Length: 304
Image 1 (cartoon, rainbow, N blue to C red):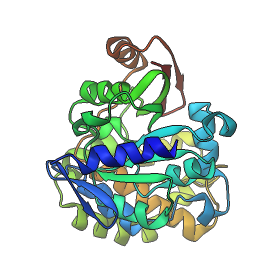
Image 2: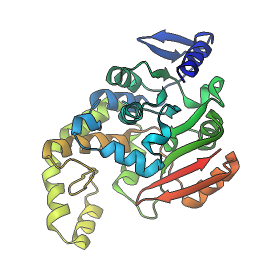
Image 3: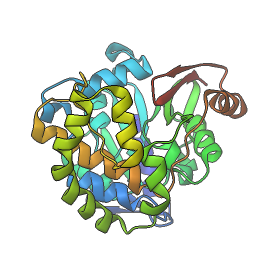
Image 4: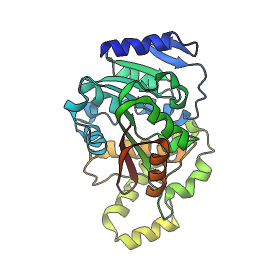
């Protein structure tokens, strides 16, 4: 398998589109429309790492969502699309997999710093610009990405093409909700604010607002809570009582800042219905697939 990693390095080395910087292959063509994510993941580089939280949060999410087993992906070649700061990269490497980690934003530098290994290649590029790597991979992983791209169909098509025949593909996507949220109310405004300024605003108000939000969530009846949120729709992603999130107040505030910025700052945010995702799966050519749904996320697992 190390031969396959070496082969990918040769492909990139021989391409006129890439140059090497800090052990990262950087695509000259890529226009970074995900500046906010680069800012976010360099500010919160370790927040979601299992090695940092000392809880198997990311491991559980990966296993439960993809349904891949450690022994199954052991020594397999995996392409991870939109890796951010590398929370899933850490888990993939721990299974003894060979990983090609792709990220368009400057978050790739945080990932490279956090995950040093001879079994990984880092690429700073848009996932739709690296067709030279088509048909090479045993597994394709794309979490937290597709809804933030300008052309969703092109994104899913690219994910499909990276896999070999018989490869497994796992992609998640925001589910379209039938009711308004603080995110949907504020995004028409916040997506136009410079990311660095928006982050400063969120970092300023969340620590002050968080105790009140905590009171709303834990002390008031649901009807009254919804009424107050309708009158004062202040965005705050509060994970109190979430079993998958550390319940330390400092950590909760950090996650609230990070995910509120994530929700409000992305240039593109395009949720899908389950029916729309089914249509995409059929269009790109997945022979076998299933869609799992949580309260806010759709997960497409399929075989090429």
